[in-house]
Image: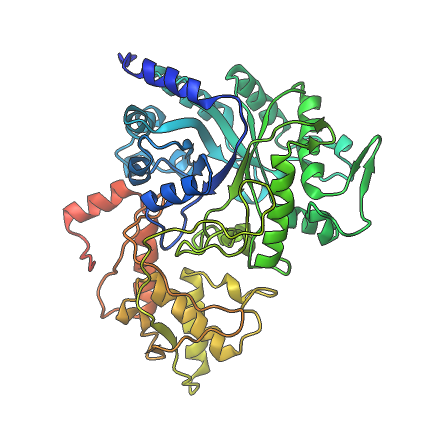
Amino acid sequence: MARNLSWLAPIALLLLLLSGSEGFIGMQWGRFATQSLVPSMVVDMLLQNGIREIRLSSPSPNVMMALQRSELGVTVALQNDFIKRPKWLSNIKNVSSWVEELLVPPVHRGVHIKTLVIMEQPFTINRGPIWNLTDIFKETVLAMEEYGLTHIKPTTSHFTDILKNVTKPSEADFRDDIKDKMLEFLKLLKNSNSFFMYEIYPIISADVNGWPIEFAFMDNNSSFAIVDGKYTYRNAFEFLFDALVVALEKAGYPHMEIVLGEIGWPTDGGKYATPENAERFHRGFLKHIAAKKGTPRRPGKNIDVFLGSLTDENKFAPALGPMLRHRGIYDFDGTAKYKIDFSGKGRDIYPITAAGTVKMPSRWCIFNNDTSNMTKVDEQFQIACKYFDCTALYPDSSCSNLSHSSNVSYAFNMVYQGMNQDQESCYFAGLGVLTPFDPSVGSCKFPVEILTAEKVDGGIQVLGYIGYSKSTSERLKCYTTLQVLPIGLMLLFMFKKQLNFLV
């Protein structure tokens, strides 16, 4: 039965008036990390940098509180894990209750939610079975109508792998295995008067397609170009964007708006993933967007953009590639990794950084160099990297040239910092030792995390673990399992007193 939510009407009208028709350069903030900046700090930092749009992976209540009556337009997501989780694991039973509990309250409090991303990259090749997107999309739109949220545009994000591999944009089309589902989705998108959300990482596409790395930059310094009839492509962004334009044309939607839900350049995890290259890419790309140059097939058009990402996400699924854990423009403490001018004017400046962050003490956990039992050392190393982020040690990454001993130290320290510098987390079967001396080597930085009370989106972050008498392996297993359990189940366990949390 529909609720009487007439009070939302004036708010919805105001938000529509505020949205306007001007384009934007926004920021994506994924928040899948062992620590996170305080939301109010992020809001202030973005506004001071002239950024007026933010994309979040979920409408986390604490983040929504920070966004109340701010100038930021907000895009949030109905995450894939909510759709697939068993209903008994959460007090939010279905999509309708999700909308009621997580979308209606922040809109009522003045959060300018403009877009709901209904599932993220549901058709990406390496994410398993193809989702029944159309049913979920319809159910969500009906729920939004029920609660008077028709001013919020529904869409779904898609990565470049929704398209067939082609040598020219004119050959582009949606993959055969998803084409029928994509055509159904596009019809729903059209009926909702919404836009197509597209995510691009030129560095990844260059590798997949065998293009020279220069083609991934807007200021391509090589002679490599792709001629497609009357169109010439000298960079991957325009190629990939126009490939989608062609696919949409073939599907019968030649004028559908395309919004870049995420685009950027990682700073670690691969050969060309460096801060220097990230700075170069963004300088050229943002100047291109600010000048409203469009693309060869859509010249002179404004393109709305979310840059990815605000900070690294060291709990992002590693199966999607090590570079995607290092997409952040900022370090975890809110300092910029490289120069970037969000206005697109190409100024040689660092952006405004976050104010008020506090780092943990300058302490690191390292390997004590006891090599009497290398089997034990290797076991502890593997355990550490199984549960915490060691992608900086991967080939061509920032820490790929360390000695074996330093590799182990790096892994131990990632656990220690991720466990909020809990002294017992540096045990590692007697192989770990604390030091006040920074063990960083050259460009390989051994991080010290920031103090934070934030929780990881999509789950609950436990700041302790069960029983110090357990081995490092057992403690990490407990910690990681608890970290990803839905909040509903966590509360059930807590009330039954089946677990003893040491927080």
